[in-house]
Image 1 (cartoon, rainbow, N blue to C red):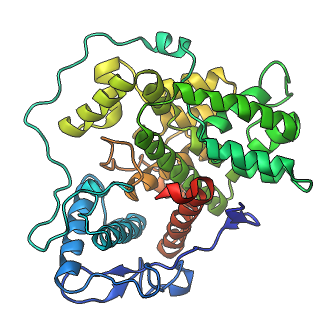
Image 2: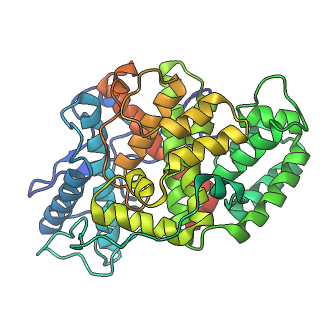
Length: 423
């Protein structure tokens, strides 16, 4: 399960095009006409022989995609060369979702949220609205725990059993290497945190913080890692009640981490630490979902219905947000300043003074939301932090190629970890 080879992004597993909206059926790719060889591919996005949208259906799909895209990017300057490429890839994903829904006789997913579909059939008469806003926001909650009280509880995180099974099989193999074990662990948010926490505990007392899963595996040993994972699987008893919410969180974390790693590679940074920080940057969300599921659901509704960023809804209802939770938790787990900083600052508006890892995680989070991998109630992009894009030495063509690889690698990770359940 090596999704990156020789330190470079894996070539896209599927070729991708986008059908232009309107009556003309021209196919495009982001940055078409420029450096075409740098694109992930120029073949059909659907399996050979699969029917694509034709005529009126293509127009409906295109109009729906444009409607969702306009809403998602409404606060962002799409004229920026890099953001224009990102928006083009986001439109590709939206059109692919619409085509997949049409083949199943369903409407496109509301708001472009991947992994969900509506019950109504696709028709030519209307475009599914992105969001329906009620006239009044939900009433505020009367009792909420303080940040200290929340962190005093045992974190309710989650471990997909598929990861435990795959890790067991790899460790049992005679030719297994630490790289093989690390490749499985680092794609799961809780396991990454748990392994690094144990490796940095006073029990092992490393001279310098262990900030990559591979180093943790080398320190702890593969057999001890397997025991740790088996014990961590019991945390499912304390996981969020909504399985769909867990998967939504995983997709956002995985896409953010993959994007952060790709940006670090492209910018000469530390891809391993960037991936870990990306997987854990929203761990505050996961702790809220597991320990306070009703409050977490209320926060999502408040953000969606009130049209406010999700951390603003958290602060309104709790007095703190998931960034505060994540930074305090990761500081306590001694995962290194860069990982904790990324969790605490990734939604701040100015990148002055940020480490490269925080910049890459911030932009990875931005890219994940742009591509449709977002938390409920947090689907509207905020402008990138001031100066963050200026720290990317990438041409639009190179950035477009990077986004294509991020999409392909995120989907490959999900398929490898969850198999048929990934859809």
